[in-house]
Length: 368
Picture 1 (tube, one colour):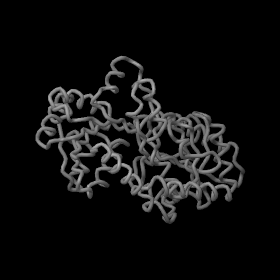
Picture 2 (cartoon, one colour; picture 1 turned 120 degrees about the vertical axis):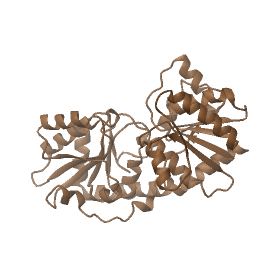
Picture 3 (spheres, one colour; picture 1 turned 180 degrees about the vertical axis):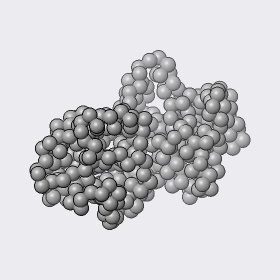
Picture 4 (cartoon, one colour; picture 1 turned 90 degrees about the horizontal axis):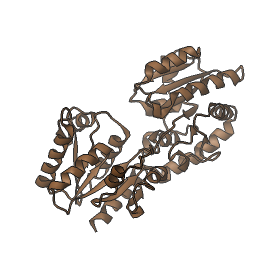
């Protein structure tokens, strides 16, 4: 079976990370031959180049849809592609256009990571219900549910959970990197989030929660709040922090590539998203045995079980979020119990080896 993976994203996002991870996991399978098509000068193209992985690219400047479609047609004919696996909505548009010029035997797979709603318009229903789309793969049941009113054939829907390299996060020592970089007292508790500074991640609620924790914490508890990541809302968020007089408590580190080294320093992972599929950060915290407090966004509740593997609240509920963070900080035994439960779940269900077998079996069913 020959599979062409397509992304139209220039940045490095969850869909690209997922696709690239699966691509590398399945390279050893001799009965699968995989290809990648991505924009020129994209992060993925550079990553492939650096790691010595061949990939096709196309010009994503003017007439990007035309260029992508032309490239898809060329690759499918030259390499005799069986399945086009698209990883974002724009890639799906290009793939559907290319089918007008390709054999009817070529089918489409669509992967979906986020649970943001799809408008119930005729064109959307036509697009996602196209007869050449054989399966739509979601990373959680919450993501799968967004298609309930969009496509009639529910047999096309399948959930395959994402995964991480659990061993990469297990047994790491706390090196106090953030304490040293930001000159914090050794006893200062770290409440952190790993997220882009975007509307989806709702860092404003993270800031509101931090303020309530500071106002209600015991006098002998020192806390600092970190967001690992960058994004287009940075200036607005910094202004909001200044308005709340929290400049000495909340810090944005920017993008970091040492997350596995930073997580052991967290006392709590605090996530405040309003929209998610099922973020890998949850799995990474589980593997690092860091307690999680989070909003009930997307598929998070499928793995964060209240009081068992973490604590979960309604969206934008900074009061409940602050109360649960303080509860964990005051109760070491509770923190140890939930992190142990969470570690067992991520090791059993969300390790890379599990995802590799899930995708390989899935592809093999298509071959049959």
